[in-house]
Length: 79
Image (cartoon, rainbow, N blue to C red; front, side, top):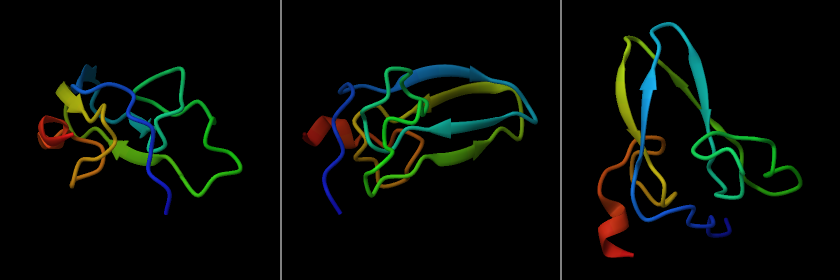
């Protein structure tokens, strides 16, 4: 699988709403980071669904290299 584009080397802090679905951009090409805008079409990448179980602040991965896709795990520190 090809390497994703690093959208930014820090997480995106987003207030999510309970019961809402979010689609995290896995390719790094979206102009609507950290969410998918369809820029991956024609590539091997697909967006990752995040279901908000509760309303809270989530730190979505910006570097696209997290070991736990969607949420930041600090992987950006070693890029």
